[in-house]
Image (cartoon, rainbow, N blue to C red; front, side, top):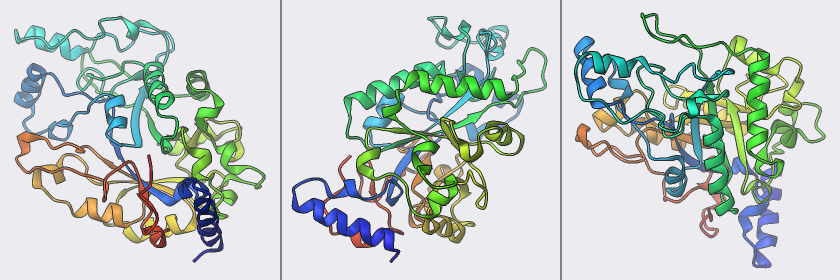
Length: 372
């Protein structure tokens, strides 16, 4: 057992003698939690779904999932959310999805009113999956998402740390009438950080600066197993940028070890910014995930993808994800889709909002249940 883990166990035992929660002395990377994928997404309108499937049967099967509100997901015990944002500095760019016009032109019943309060006209980051097609969302703007998560966090101040993984949406559909996404340049990423810090005070955040501390680089702190204690991390939110290549380099540029940045990045090991890795395939990359977790990195992986496992009732990927020790396991199905007829539903083993990481703390199993 690594020295840092042994120290954590001894400290936890000492705290337990004084009646406090023994979990608080352990590190935030020593637990495992369940989360959702594209957590804001609502179902595509039935009329638009019909049109899409008439046009290209089966092409959009991977989009057949949807979620409760962010608050309801957090209440259910999920501690990782995923939010996609689109750059909209002037406002209104994504306010009139073309899919609504497609339904009207076909003479089909319309879906519910889109953006009844007109917030899509305001400048700032917007939240949706695919503009013009998969645009139904339980939060229209990133500011709305932050306000909802903050309200829930304020009402549950002892919650386990919540991770919000984020994509900068830049893909566009080359089709007449469809809206092209704007790229994310340095100014866009700076504005993104500003929205995070404007929506959450410092005492609600876990930033790269918090983890790096006095270490020379962020990765040096991670390899020293110096993630903050669970007691410090309770009630806080960590943001993770799920981008690579040019977008990731743009975000890092001028911020070595992500100094001053609000989000972590999926930087590869061996770089100063490496701390939080995204490894989607829990079966093929099982040993790689274990290596990362044992080394000190936090890892997010997936229990299912593209509706495949849910349609087949196949739990092999989910089982591998939890066994890998990845700290955050993502699913589209914390509730089953009745239309699939398989009952596929992913739950954290043992239930609750978190459990001891099976790779890092197997000796912790006899301790009292981890409290959310």
